[in-house]
Length: 97
Image (cartoon, rainbow, N blue to C red):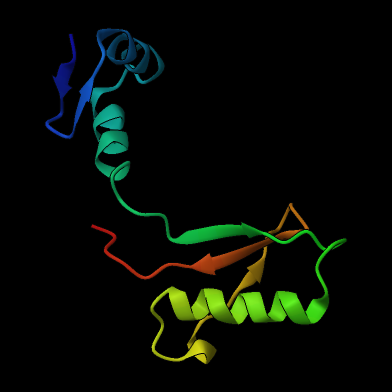
């Protein structure tokens, strides 16, 4: 049977117990559960550099920015992932609260 926790999620009792073990402070657990439903601020896209020509990667970047609902593709700044060289980070527009 699922347990309603924090009015955000219905969790299985085993999940609730595990979370309470990992987050003994109710405030920390509540903060986590409040942020989980929010969309991420970045989307990660892997580009297989060994199989993708530079122009194709640039076209992909432009398409990602357009599909991310930016008014102007120049407003979209994709970034290289700091630890994964074949991953692009694309900002996502949307609510953060």
